[in-house]
Image (cartoon, rainbow, N blue to C red; front, side, top):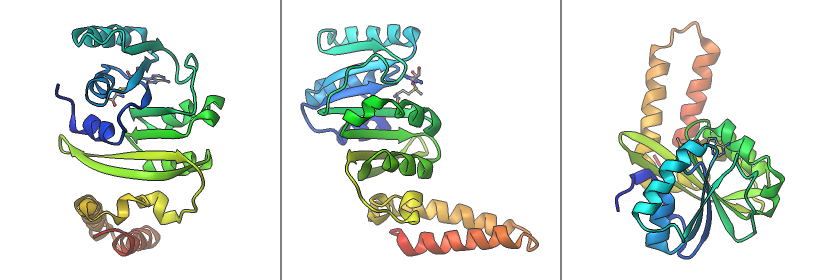
Length: 218
Ligand SMILES: C[S@@+](CC[C@H](N)C(=O)[O-])C[C@H]1O[C@@H](n2cnc3c(N)ncnc32)[C@H](O)[C@@H]1O
């Protein structure tokens, strides 16, 4: 079966035979893929009953109805979790993800794989505050857009401001050089076009660029 590069990258972070809870599963492709390719046990969950009708059609197409459990739930509300589970939340914004992770059930969770569509710095900060550290990070270009996928594990690590901004794992990986170069070029263009009177804005961008060059793989 074919899934997007983004979903495949998420799936590649998961070990065989894992117990997955996919929150906001939508079409259910990730769960179908993980069941077939990695023999995972998946709970495919979504807030929308309508969406889940479509999920069920896809799961039926692959004859996996007895393997993938479908649950309609707002975040973790209706889901029973255990410390073996890997929670996956992808394709949503940081605020929605953080709201879902406010559930007390998160205290029982040791593994989270998250792909947010925005504000990754805030996402890293908030999840580290919940008692997780950043175990792995992948940056993937899919359909002309970059996606950052972060694997958090239960535990503590100290991070610099720059780690939250650029990613403690991702920034050290030379393979991500192109991604950081794009950010550098974009900000350099803004700096060049910003009139001289905006002294502080210019200074902030200048310092950001200096730091980007110093601590990433570019
Ligand atoms: C853009 S889709 C992402 C689908 C899939 N996870 C992916 O990465 O391709 C977001 C899905 O999250 C669901 N969703 C939004 N808020 C949710 C919540 N609080 N709890 C569960 N599902 C939610 C939506 O109904 C939608 O199906």
